[in-house]
Length: 156
Image (tube, rainbow, N blue to C red; front, side, top):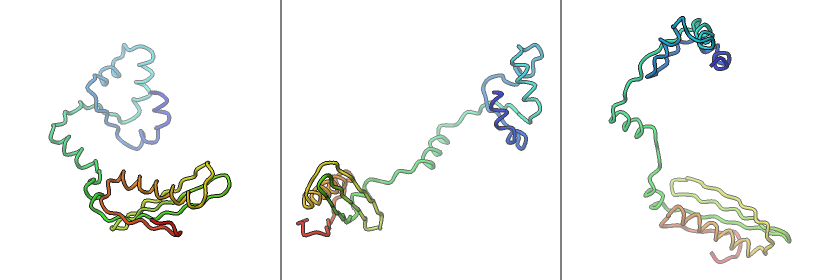
């Protein structure tokens, strides 16, 4: 507690601190016959404007309203019905290969990925790897309609 008071001293000095609790902290800190440590805390905290208030109960509907307002998850149905474009590219050398994948929705949402593989492969094989990874991403999004495009002569 002493560390908190020392670190947050400017905040304690500038504002009224309201402690919501269901414990009798005010009575404990105001008792004169406290133990040594509680007396030290009471002295340190007495110079600040701290008020103790009982914790109020939250009605069930207020809690539900708060959760609904403060949590946002995009509906999955929207992603399924959109038309997505899948752009892929792969590159390789003698030791490794890498792929680049970009998904663009009809509302211009962009998901971009790049992956690095440590296995050797040919350029065509890395292009196929890019296509496979892109199709797995599309499958995870549960997209119903997509078009894949590639910059090589690979049949997509």
